[in-house]
View 1 (cartoon, rainbow, N blue to C red):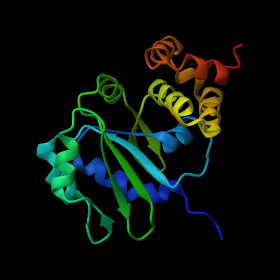
View 2 (cartoon, rainbow, N blue to C red):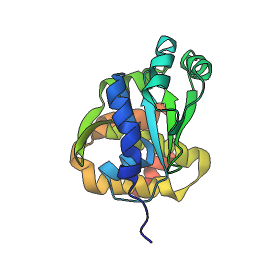
View 3 (cartoon, one colour):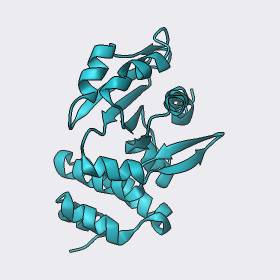
View 4 (cartoon, rainbow, N blue to C red):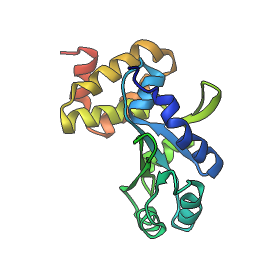
Length: 190
């Protein structure tokens, strides 16, 4: 039995986000694959610049007979948070999940959304987080959770997409987020 293609499973979410017309960017494991090497993932991480007044529009963009979509009130409440707003969307047909993180008033999220990249993936073009943002966040996940997966992802991104990465900017983000030790681990500094 062949494993499902994450791109195929993510397509319904990406199509709906594109139709919504609100700034978003794919991040996490899916973006790491685009900048690095293919790997298995069962979810799509998305940062969305959703305002509370747009909660109903987002809710109505997804067919609730196919997708689990939180109630509008929950989406509105999460969108009203200054930081750390979050909810999930689930494709009931496949079980594939989109973890939606709301940008709120976080200046780093605002910067990343302003510098997101439009990337051709298959037959569609999607918005993907800047690689510097993605790498810096992977390093925070390494620090906070210890998973080697983040180290592998960052090394793969550096190997495949190094020409796209602004190392000076990445260094600033590494210092700002306090992940210098994790960066040194990734690049082999002693």
